Image (cartoon, rainbow over all chains, first blue to last red; front, side):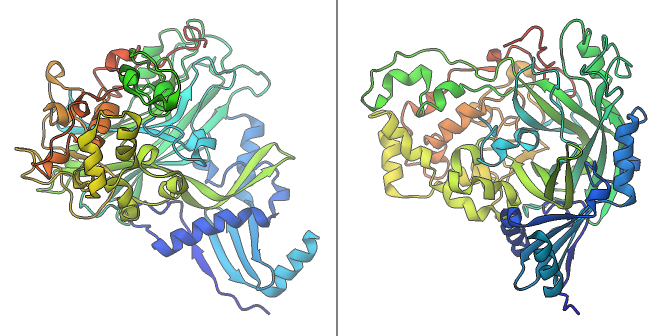
Length: 120
Length: 455
């Protein structure tokens, strides 16, 4: 059903980190996308974990004295994690999907159309 | 400011806003270098009840380039985690915080340190405690002792600290941002037809303010390549690409890969040299892309402004600007390092790649405290800025003087700098900072307390 043109950029390091360098083109592309992100950012899957504050692996970072409420938030992040979908262009089906510290770029006109309909 | 609120976007995100980078051979441990990156500018010490803290959602990094390509060869990453012992009180602390593990400390931060080199990475510290903010004599008695407990030995000669410190960068913001006024010279200012002002002493706008510092001390042998003692250092802060405000939980949700939002190497480059329309772009790019901005270094707008702001004071600088000759001296100081043969016995050249990095020739021994010049290399002290940067270096005066032409004879001996160029200053010295630097790691002074500095 969909012709996917996926580009995945994963890992927690930004462009400047050694061994994780992106091309200048991708850097500029990222900057441009970030500028347009406000146009259509949709959270999918986050509703079930309403208090996820970060996408890091919380087990390694949760301090022992963390409150029950705060710990619950972190565990929710581990179990599911929010998935953010950015429909860059509904007409062409250009979609970015963000989860954890990764992003996936895909082209899926049907999915984009369904999201666009849901947004109306 | 050095890099405080220097660009439109980052000025709205203080938690990720880098303010200063210091890099020097550790004076009390000269086989090591100390790298310090400051964040969260202009903290009013009394700013409670939610006192300042690092961002759990920010990736802080300190980078070292040791082969001159303007890209990181070694990166230390710092990620913070905030914990609240009792969410049912509004208090930061419920009694005196007399030790780093005090149960009276309600909201605290810890952090992990990861080193990335090539394609390998390793976590070298986990759950490391940051100190509390300095609140006052009842909440944080013996602050220095508690903060000292937040200095962590990670083994292999590596020591880290991350927490609040006194602002060490001294600058007269109030006058400089008033149309380039320098109080000691304001009797010479054009004043745009407004009534003139008499010369006056400088006023340190950052005195009694705090910052948050990330400091790491590492063996020189760990960061240099054999036979290449000069390193380039800078810091970055990055955020994930997507943020959603979850109104139901009252928290943000972040997702996606991290992207750089703040960068700092040499002081004042993005602040003063890069024009407003490119500052945020500059913040998002690595030093290896700085050839894009080289023209703003070699033809600095401030050099053209000085003769206008101070009529008749800088005739030789005005002629140099009019000639259109590129400022190769500034390019060397800020973008490549100074090659051998320019200054006798000194070089911190890293190659031809134009990259804004704080370059430190680690083979140059620290200058004893009593013999240091706050004007660094301009003052004949090769262990100071722009060979790295010490806590007390007067980078405002050094860069003002360089831009005004003092360093141009390095590449054109026929040029005579204006007499005023070598005198430029905003009228401040390290004595303008009330909290003195420490003699040992992390070197920056004890932060000002809210009780003693309520406004």
